[in-house]
Image (cartoon, rainbow, N blue to C red; front, side, top):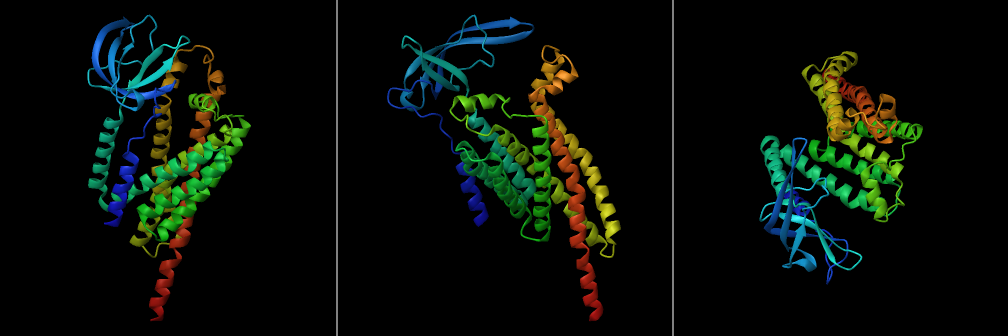
Amino acid sequence: MVKKVLLIILLLFVLTPIGYLSAQEGGTVGEVFEARVIDILEERTLTSDQAVKIQQNLKLEGLTGAFTDRQFEYYGIGDIEVIGSGSYKIGDRVLVNYTKDADGSEIFFVLEKVRRNDIYLLFGLFVVVVLIVGRSKGLRALLALVMSFLVILKFIVPRVLAGSNPLIIALIGSFFILLLLIYLTEGFNRKSHLAVLSIFLCLILVFLLADFFVGLLSLSGTVQEETAFLVSAGYGHINFQGLLLAAFLIGALGILDDVVVGQIEAVGQIKQANPSLPAKKLFKMAMAVGNAHLGSVINTLFLAYAGASFSLLLLFSIKQPPFLSLTQVISSELVATEIVRTLVGCIGLALAIPLATIMAVWFYTPRPLKENNRENQI
């Protein structure tokens, strides 16, 4: 019951709307606030290369900050086609950017639709499905998920923004996330202890590999679009190469958790089914399970990265500079970063299976022998 109450409190904390830049009296230049579409003044449809785009002039009413209840107009119809601009209907909530031009005239620009409530609906569906299917273990998994999110949001992110070494902060944060993931979902037992130790050793291997190849390929960690926003916001002091390595570690943690826990469980189940099984045979049988798991997980990992970078893959296919040849493609830091991220994660994943299996066999094998000796003495 206590866990359920704690989970509800944490979910409410996470789902509490995080306000955008709050408005001061009279409004602040460069402010972002929410508004509602109350009328569509004019609409124009553009058709080019079988693509249909809609431009609109809208009448809006402010919902937050100094613009609450204030009505104003947005002119989205023009000769310049804005990438990402969408069409809206009456009643839609949108994000609006407020600025002033050189003459002091107010300019309102609709950024995008507010999707918060729809995302909350999807998240609620996710929680319900996990609880129905996973029951008590699903509840513990959700609790671990929320706690992990809080570690990232409340510990790792603020300290990185404050100028702390991202790698050290990520190592500390990853260790706490690891403890939360394992002990909340699997309980405080031998299997959990083995999983924590195995995953921590694998994280060290991933870090050493990532550190070596990031240095070898001279990856700066500054090619992502988000870096420009951080620099323009006054956070250019961040060690972006360390931040890149920190992202590698946090990304590897989730997939290692899945593989290591599954492998230790496989060893335990095989040993329970046949307590007299020798260590060599136990290792061989467990590795057969692990190898089958390895192929599917590596494909999952690769396809996940490919899906996240699908727009980049499309860019390669048009063969425009600087993406004319394979050599040019893989020499790009943006591409090289994703290659290193994928391959380092796969190597860590491949090494995790034999490492976890060896440790599990070593810990599980002596236990039945001691029990048998005790029975013989009796």
